[in-house]
Amino acid sequence: MWKGTRCAIISIVMLCSCSDNRLKVDTANTKLEPVLIQRLDRDLFAMNPAAIAEQTPLLLKKYGNYYSSFLSNVINKGDVHDSIYKALAYFIEDKDLKEVYADVQKIYTDEETTKMAAEFTQAFTYFRYHFPTAEVPKYYTTYISGWNYNFTSVDSTLGIGLDMYLGAGSKYYQMLQYANYRTRQMTKDYIVSDAMKFWLVHTFDKNEPVNNLLNHLIFYGKLYYCLDAVLPDKPDSIKISYSSEQLNYCKKFEKNIWAYFTEKDRLYNNDLKEISQYTVEGPFTSAISKECPPRIAMWVGWQIVRAYMNKHRDITLEQLMNNNDPQKILVGSKYKP
Image (cartoon, rainbow, N blue to C red; front, side):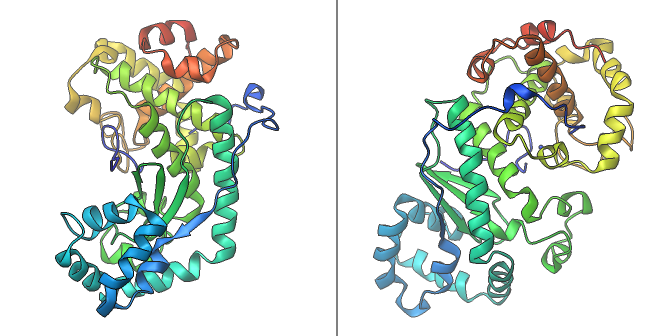
């Protein structure tokens, strides 16, 4: 299954790091095989365009269903057949994509992907510690999608789109006219954090029937609290993709932001169009001000869940994520900035 985002993200999503010692856990007895990153991007662009059909069995053996799904969902539509092979030949011979591939190889060297693998190993070790029965990826595969997918998931493979992380100044992002607020996050520093957000949504987004603003606040608050747990050393700015100025705004006006959400019964509004104003990506949250960061509901939800977990230190992350009563979490947090 190819997973997208909940209510317009993911790409995926803070404030001064509110260090929480309970999340500095000992994972010495938590077993996880070291992550190895497979380079589908290299394997595809190393193919002979005239002999794709003959080389495909080798890649099917190496990548399994992920290879077939990649061809079907990224390269073309449908099953693996002759037209797919032709589409793949066009893909790997495309002038722009060949240039992108060359840039990816310069940025994501073997040394760089080894560092990335070590980060993933640490993050998923924490994930397994907190969620011992939840699925973790067995395989990690990099690819180029033509700027279409940051991450994909097929069976137990986590796919990582390296062309979505070429650096804020990439000429391709300028060519595609991506906004600055978006390209600022398209660097290698964000890959592991964004990937963990993707996996957390993949694992825990159950699409509960209650679809009001409070539900979204608490869902994302729980998700970001999980990021605190699996990436305890990452700064909040990376986790939520905010600049230092945006984080300072949140800290300075936290009381005002919360007052805005609690007036006029906004927390219980179930108008998805209005909810999206506070959860979608953008340069700012226009409903509040041009200085207010985007996705402000997620940041507020994060503070609520942090407060809740600080007041209920006996509750595990697994219990938190299984708690589908946003009102109970809000009341239990005693959140009052």
